[in-house]
Length: 207
Image 1: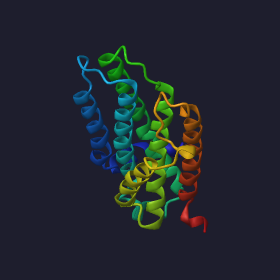
Image 2: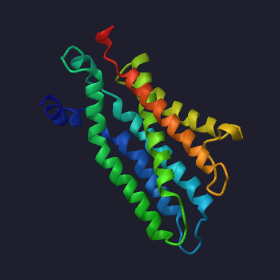
Image 3: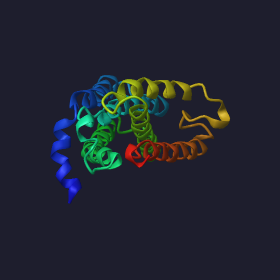
Image 4: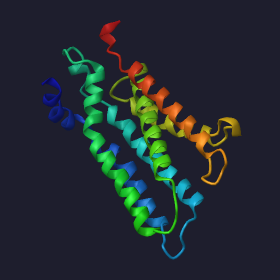
């Protein structure tokens, strides 16, 4: 019964504007670029959606910033539960956001084929990487400003993926023969990010 009681106080403590602005900017970019009269091909659309998901991940990194951390640290609620509560608040909105992105693409470019399932995996992975980076940064610095370090780290990691050699490439084009193998690597990155998030969210009191 403790977790439901945390939802409303947690929602009030979250600074929502840095969380919401980047994904909304991604949606605005999507609406500006999509043009039924000059439709993108599958590769161009995949690149655009990858940019949109990176923007959303940068926003999610701010979700774990907790200005109340000095006050709530002594209470009998673990760090992992506090962070899980914040993510639980955001998950429905993130799911609706992604459904809105998919619906927008279907509406504007109904004849352009694109791999929804594979890009959903990519979007989930980038989001979890953003949360893991924020959790790690918050552990090293402060729970109140982890995203200050995590947001640039996410952008740097995404930039690194653009120069990975072919055997370990992540940003594979849909028509590339290595598309399926690339998404096996995406799933591996997702698993590593989940493990990093859980490790970084161990309660400091357990030391």
